[in-house]
Image 1 (cartoon, rainbow, N blue to C red):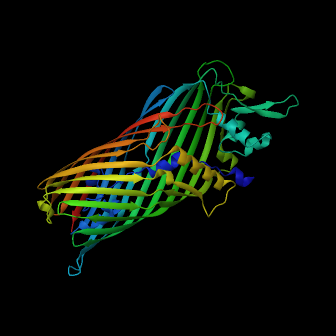
Image 2 (image 1 turned 180 degrees about the vertical axis):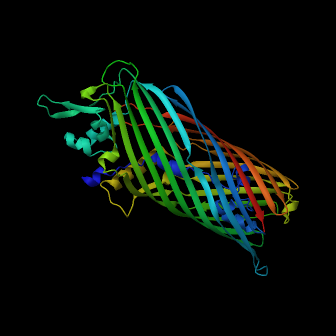
Image 3 (image 1 turned 60 degrees about the horizontal axis):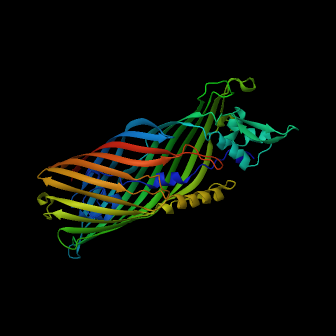
Length: 504
């Protein structure tokens, strides 16, 4: 019973998409051209997109890319719109490229090695939604939890669900329904649903994914390039959700408001492999192909919950508060599991303007990529280091829902660069298709980017501006036996990236 009381299975299919629907990250130059670097090569981003592209390096390189982001979100929940914003900074990537001359008699022109870090996704955001609901209440999920577990003993209702219904039960948000002989026949919520509830939800998220990599590439006669990368990935995700329901009638009806606060901190470490090849059939053209294996993470969730209620003196009480820490001897809940981020397949083509072995004589390029992401193959599984009641069955249910709710997606990237002696001008476009199977909701994304570059005497500075538009659907709560509504999200974020580096 103690083991059951400290375990919460909170994974859902939306988590898998959040951790899987990632961009490449990378240098300001690669981001300015929409990330279309599968066939381009000669940029540090090749190490974690198509490592074969490192084979185009002839000199060593060190670079560092700080970035600034400005997020703006707009929600539409129950026909009510709201806006929120969050700004911050990040380190997009840093790395070192080390080329080594090969054996020209053996046709191997050079070998190249690289180590570094890249951030393919940043989870920092803030969302606020609000709307009036007279069809359901957030509190009904606590009723369903007790009914589903066939809880008839009030002592078990008060202790066995410290992250949900026990908190609601102990603060009288939900109460018992009694038979004439005072035995429990069910539970009720004190939220006056039919007269209408003002529902408000603020969700603040932080964290991201950082991939540390080691890459190697081989150049065969400047015609064929091969490469491979080992990735060691660090994932952190912090989420604080505050949901509030208030009585809109302002009447004395044993309900003023309640507030539920859920906190989650997820951390994980994973490993993956990236392989690629670039072929130059003729001087001006390159064709690239890359495969990103699944990244397998070992994950740990730490979580807590708190409920505050003001029930206008119900049962002689004023404002009541209870936290999961009160029921767990001051400890947060913890759950260990595994997660597999699905594989990717990339195909790219690049056309170089005035292709020449000496990059100083090149005038620019046009590059295009198509990326296939098999999101339906994302998977949760129990950890071998932990054993929980029904953990495997629950995660199998999540995986089943993932396959039914989401589909595979395509990412299309297009970009180019024009070179004017020591100055470069760049533009790019990036489009991620919708991955929801249901009609009416979408999480498609679109990036538009532009940038400038300066290269002279071995030093270079690149500056890029990216504007991203992406849609999503967020469910503040889900119910099995009653209506629940999605909140439609429209996000617009600006990202400014600078890369500073030098060659040696």
